Length: 141
Length: 141
Length: 141
Image (cartoon, rainbow over all chains, first blue to last red; front, side, top):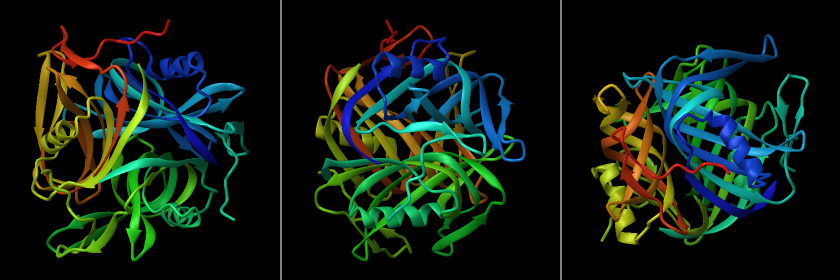
């Protein structure tokens, strides 16, 4: 789907907020229907997911302690008519080893977030047979 | 090199496609000569590369199974006069451990891809002495 | 903070440069006060940091050898009235294992860098009680 560039936001999330929940609230408050998100920072006690096709659901991996948020990459689109952020993170421990997956939870120690709004026909997530909530596939003609 | 912003695309790659091959076909179909790419999703049986300077070539690392695509970062430029995507990925296993490198292959389970086209004089990749296909270096005056 | 899109840059850093130092010089030369940065490439002997709250300072992790720069995500803002790049990297070794954290040093083997300038009221880093140099928090009303 082609879009044109909308507003851009760069901001620091207040310490102690849940990162994913804050990004969702931010998108809703600013009425961002479609966009892309990236960020760096540091997260406490993050919970990440690995999608397990055998059970058609996420396996939750709970990490303890504070992790450098080495990358956050994701997007915002509509789900049940509300802005919904789909976000993956890479997290570094004190030895520099990385862990990562689908972000479920994580308390902000530091989060510097960039959101690029995209203007156009919104993308909508719908439940698919495999248990995931996804946009329509976009084949190449 | 300075560019101005061109078109933007956000889309889901059909399940089962080879991700790198699809991004290259997409860029060619849309005539994207220069751009940046980011994505998240999940990939099956990815093959990633580590460039080994001793042999001036990539060492291929074959991963088996399905991995969360925790980050995909890359760009599109010209190589042999055709759009060419240079892409690096971080991939998470079921324990949340990350692997990554230069993307060679990987079958899409889910891929939500963002491409920002850049307009201006195209960057061209050429074979360099070290075995890599690279743009001209851009020194600061 | 809301911004409007400014100039965009996509370029290859000359081999042998220190990556962070080059990005800072680039931002200063181009007078980029605010922006976001992403990159891929390959780095030699990188030094990355993990912020240790017990000592209110970074613990430095020194990696030896050449690593695929699987992701670089960060931003540019003002610190002491000069452009300052805050950058996190994920780095892959010859087995595809990833390490990462806050980028302190690293010699460029290859670095393909994208910078999106943002126009608006500049964000300024100031020393905070926890030892970090951060922007003001931006609460949601």
